[in-house]
Length: 482
Ligand code: NDP
Image 1: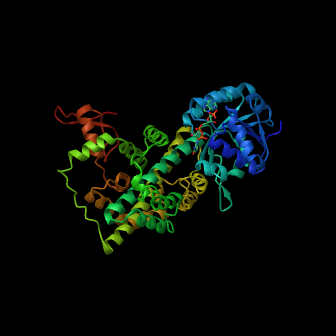
Image 2 (image 1 turned 45 degrees about the vertical axis):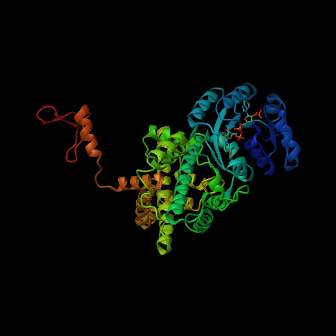
Image 3 (image 1 turned 60 degrees about the horizontal axis):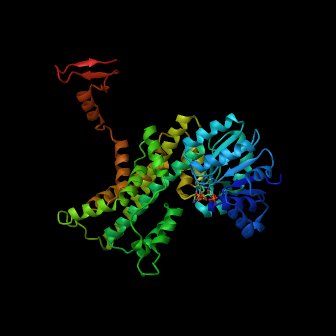
């Protein structure tokens, strides 16, 4: 045995993780179902460190020092189970299997429990940052046992991104905690991108600015509190010109957003946990809506004469400048709301599954390497550091001030979106959720009344404890139902 760790599954992600490990001085055993990928890795990058290639799974396992650490980086779902089944009879008690693919956290929990029976440690680890991140420093979110992290921690922390000397990797919690947090990370990424896309659309329709000009605005925003990787690449994409047509690139791309499913998982889980992640849900639905081309065309045609361009004259001069600043502030406030909801979901998942996740640490490991990396995450970390039991990020002093400052802009932007007929579902739902949270009374009281009227579902009262039902069809007297 000559390798410290093994990687099986050498498509783009596995290949780059293996190279990253080798570049940091770890000897890496290599395996892929089809040997060609292994061969090309060694041919092209063999000089980057110590690689130990094997054609068979048995040779691969035999080439790793015990207790073994084996990273599985194959297509999520059945392929992962197939590879695990192949590995298990070859491994010894105390060995560690790490699934770095995008597994559903419930699959990870199932696999962890099954492998524990065999005396093996199973770690589901989220890895964010795409192929570039995998090579140059991703954000890594490993779950699994403390014991497994003792073995993996030094290796993973050495290859992760680093911000202010702190690696973007920490032990998230037991069994599926790592994949759970990666899932919510992706959900937040959906919300972040939808908010950015709405901001662009509002600027374009609201001021008549072209994509190149809007690229400059985003560049400008990236110098302030919105500074983040996604804002940076928004400027990049909007500033790009299509070589073939000479038109703005964004205008030649089909406007139907695709998805691989992690946004849907986040929303499904939020529904299970009863956590209102409204911004993530709207972002996920907005992608679905964009894909309904036939329906979009039919509705557009049906209303072409009925709703002639509401009040769509773009703003100009100082008004336009004010609107740009309003959109920036609304984007920031909406983003705070979206992140607050995502962190609520992590806390709820942690409570439900007993993971004991440290929320501040999650903000810390997302500061670099991953797609949602942003200056703003430092503020989230600070908020949870000063109060780990924070009910909501919205009440942390820094964010309360930020949202309060942006509130008038937020309201103006949502109102302008409605007036112009520009869809801004994530901006709107974020503001609505905020208003619902701060309302003294919600019409939920009426809903309780309706439920009691049609289904005797009972209600509680504001002035005394207990559960009650009104005899709606009778004399309308009230009964106690305790
Ligand atoms: P793919 O998801 O495209 O998977 C291809 C790899 O899976 C190949 O090595 C392939 O082997 C192997 N494979 C597929 N089916 C089987 C099987 N039945 N048995 C054994 N091996 C199999 O690769 P990526 O590198 O894009 O992603 C790997 C994992 O990382 C996925 O789970 C993905 O969701 C996750 N991920 C991807 C990111 C990205 O940006 N691409 C970012 C973060 C996570 P063969 O060469 O023989 O076909």
